[in-house]
Amino acid sequence: MLRTLIHNTLNNINLLSFYSLKKSGYLFDKGWFNSFKSKLPINKENEPIPWMTYPFIDFIPSRLNSNMKIFEYGSGNSTLWWSKRVKTIISCEHDKLWYNSLLNNLPENVTLEYREVENGNYAKKICEYVNEFDIIIIDGRDRISCAKNSLLALKKDGIIIWDNSDRKEYQEGYNFLTSQGFKRIDFIGLGPINVMSWATSVFYKSDNCLNL
Image (cartoon, rainbow, N blue to C red; front, side):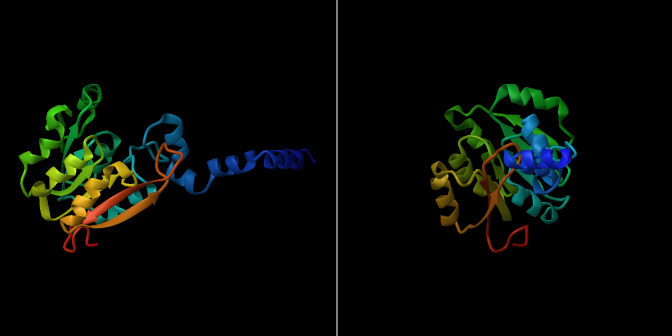
């Protein structure tokens, strides 16, 4: 009798559904409650994952291989996650305090570079490379400039991953990539930490390293 009363009371104030979500189901399986509580992009086992949408995180692992090279604008838990799946990563960071906090916790296949955003120094970092990377990730500052500077550094079959690609302020960058012959796939949904959905997009050409 008491158990039924508690159940009905919780159900009436919508706490039962919240309790059920926290104990099983999609959000539980993805570790969303862990990430929301800690304010870190982590999974159910408290391991680092990219701060990108869950649909994208589900899609990408089987497409990666241990020979790939990545350039990443914006570093953090994503850097650690990618480092376990590819050969090398060069990650560019604009925040000096965050850069310093990461330096001593990176695996050997990661090179972390600090660049100030001012005068375009951050966005121009990738201009030091030609035909070098299988994947370029745009998830930091000055994203439109980063996209425009990235093409020479991308291999012929390389792809670009752009997080928060639902934001209209980056439309010039999306238009630039499509004008250069890139197609686009959007992965829309929830992701770590956030309570609202957003988009992570893959920009690719017909001949690409993900076999799209």
